[in-house]
Image (cartoon, rainbow, N blue to C red; front, side):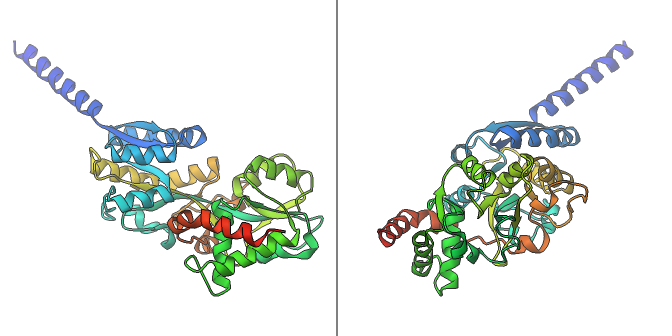
Length: 339
C-alpha cells in the first residue's frame, strides 16, 4: 500500500512537472527562410536549458508589429523602422540590463533606446571593379568621378541606402535630414553627370551588371557582395568609405503584453551571447552587435562583416524622418533633374 502511494505521488509530480514544462512557450517573430533556419538551430539549446518551447511567429515586418499590438508575441524581431513605430505607440517594455547582462557587451550605437537594441547588422558597402579602378575609393564622392561615366550603380531613390547617402551629402553641405537641400543638389549633380547606369530596385540586376562589367562602381549590400564572390567574380572588391556605411539592422523588443517577461528577457540575453551572434554571422552574414564575438580568422567572408571601428562609423540618419519625407524629396529631385 505504501509502495503504491509513493508511486502514485511520483506519477502525479512527474505529470505536473511535464505539464509545467509544456505550459512554457515563448512566441518569437521571424521572417522565415534562412533567418528562421538559424533561429531554430540556436533556439534548441535555449529550449533545453530553460525547459521552454519557442513558437515561431512567421511573417513580414509589418505583420510583426501588428501581432505585437495584438498581444500575440513575446519577443519581437523586426526592422528599426517598425521598432520606432512601436516605441511611439508605447508597445515595448524597457529592457532591463540586470536581466539581460549581455547588453553590457553591445556596441554603443547598437543601443538605440531603452526599448530597442540591435540584434545583428549588415551594411551597404562601395563595390568597385579593380580592372578599371585599381585603388580602393576612400569616399562616397567617387560616385561623382567623371571618369566613371555610365558605369555607376546606386539603389533607387526611394531606398534607404540612397536616401541615407542624400542625408550624408546634406550634412557635408551644411544641412541635414531637416535641411535636405544641399543633399538634393548633390544627388541631382550625380543624376545629371551621366555617371549612373541607373538607380535600381532589383539587387539581382545590380549583381549581374557588376558581373558583365557594365558597372564599375556602386553601393551594394554585403549579402549581394557575397553572391558576386560566390559566382567566381575576382575583379570586384569592396571598401567601407571614410564617411561610414549604411546599415541593414535587425532589432529586438519585448512587448508589454509578453506572457512571461522574465523568459523573454532571458531569450534576448541569449540572442546577444557570442555563440548566437557568431551563428548569424557565419550562416547569414549578419555582423555581431556585441564586442565579445570576434569573427574566426578562418571564416571565408569575415571581411564582409562590419566590425570594430567600422561598426562605430555606421551612418544612421533619422529613419522616421527619411520615410516621412522621401516622397517630397523624390518630387523635388525629379524637378531638379529634368532635361
